[in-house]
Length: 341
Image 1 (cartoon, helix red, strand yellow):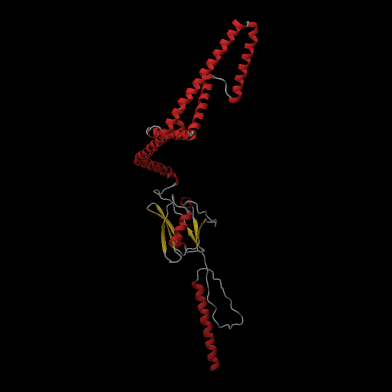
Image 2: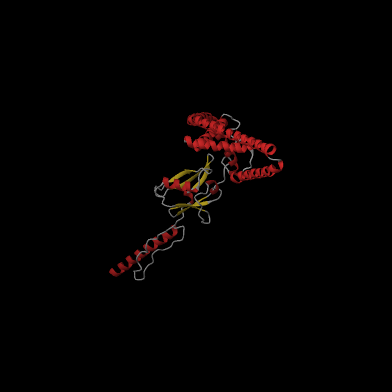
């Protein structure tokens, strides 16, 4: 009797374990992969080990993308909080990197995130969301892949055909900003230019006095040099006439005048060799003026380079003021408003 009871208990235990195993197979929708096998040394009446499932694909119902009030909205389950979160996208202003940054900022548990195409190719972070939403894509968050279906664009949503209108709107806003703030900016700039102009005139005032004195002295010496040349030529002509008609005859003085003319030609050519300029009377006078001016400036310790820099800066400030006070030439390039020589 005891052996019959033992056999009945063993049959009941094996039947119960087999019934539970068939029930688990019926309730499983996908193929089951056994992670552990039954060793042959174990008794046959022991129940099989627990079945383990592993998947990296998230259910498609957890992620959706649709347009609400003309803007795309992405719903994603957050890994840490296990709840769905809505992300409102801005296709014209956001990029893929901005979406990933928003995901990591919303849930610190997102350690890695990237966007893939349907064939598994990674999308660059600099890609705009407007380009990404044209086709279906995948989101890879912490080794979990979410398939995102791109819906059809609404008629009120911004598309690439309205980019020109957006640029026109930006230009209009810029013009409006200039119309509101440009007068105050011009007044401030004019005040600064006037202050700089007064400062330059104060710095140039003592230099102008010294420069005027040096210019008068140089003009006097250059004029005196010219009159000295006239006097020497007059003396030379009188001497040649006296020697020709009173002392000697023309036959004796003709070779002398020839050599005097030849020496004059040599002197003119030497002037060109030294100055690289033709012997023209106005240029020769200007050269003498500059010679006496720099000689006097060195004697008076007048800084010619500083004076020239201040004069150039003064001319630049006056030109800026002239452009600022002329609304027609204010927006034109400098090359178009420069005075032609």
